[in-house]
Length: 102
Image 1 (cartoon, rainbow, N blue to C red):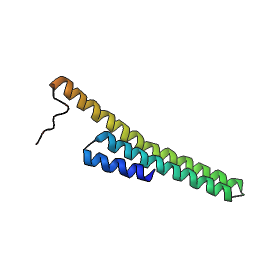
Image 2: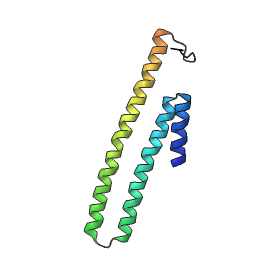
Image 3: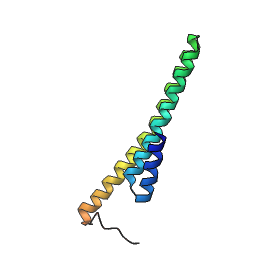
Image 4: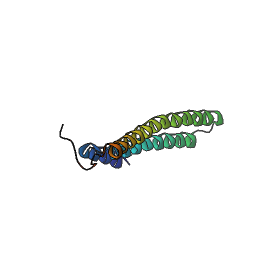
C-alpha cells in the first residue's frame, strides 16, 4: 500500500493528473487508518483489562473518524476541480487534449 500511494502520487505529479494524485492521497489515508486499527487490535490482544481495551477502542474510533475528514475534503476538491474543468470544456468549447503553453 505504501508503494501504491507513492507511485500514484509520483505518477500524478509527473503526468499533472489530479485524479491520479487523488488516488495516491486516498491510498495514504487508507494506509493510516489500517495502521491505527492494527495498533488497536495489537493492544487489545495484549490487554486483559476490559476498561483499557474499551478506552483504546474509543480512541481508535475517534482517530479513524478524524481520518475521514481529509478524505472527504480531498474528494470534494477533486470532484469540484473535475466538474469545473468539464464545464469549461463544454461551455467554452476548449479542447481537453490541448494544453496551454502559458
